[in-house]
Length: 258
Image 1 (cartoon, helix red, strand yellow):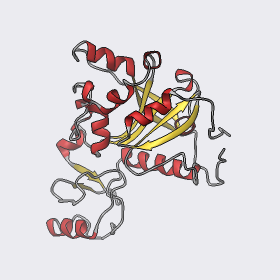
Image 2: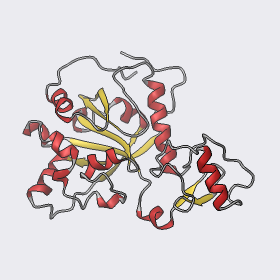
Image 3: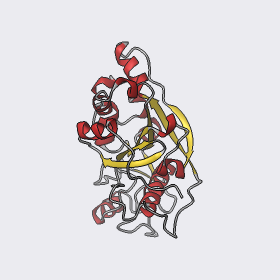
């Protein structure tokens, strides 16, 4: 078991997530993908998401954390590694999605009500594809398409490189004439990126030293059994091995909810 550190964050802070039932995915595929899969928005505390929520399917569910700026999370959701728009996910044929291919290996009685809980950083959406603006550290907006930022994915943990800053200044010398943004600063300060960074940093603080909670900055998948966190894996996952662990889950070690 692993205890909280003295610098634990505010775990009661609410975060919006989206939930899709695996059964809805199966029904959609069986109906020739004629029915749109609806994701239901829910609000959970950070504590619920990090430790597990026994009120959700008796604490048995899959938690997917990621950003739609990464090919891994897009391919996992839709089978298309280049997806950019949020609503594109509900239009794709989910039979090509990695999560369907993975969880189809689970026995049918587990598939029936298995919830997939998504906490996603949305950067590529209709709004910012059309306006293509980034909110920077000094509350200025810049056009990320015109700034020629070298890290085209612009994930929540992307930072300004020396080359990025030089290119941006050459394109528009006035965009940060006070030079408040320096090399190594985060590129994005929109609410989606801030919440995502906060959550990942919370998890790193709480599970510091825990080998079972593997984190990177882009995307990962965790599963919970009987309301307790069990294990994470970074995407892309070895689906057969991961699902085998879920399907064969027995009482074992877990991190205490104190």
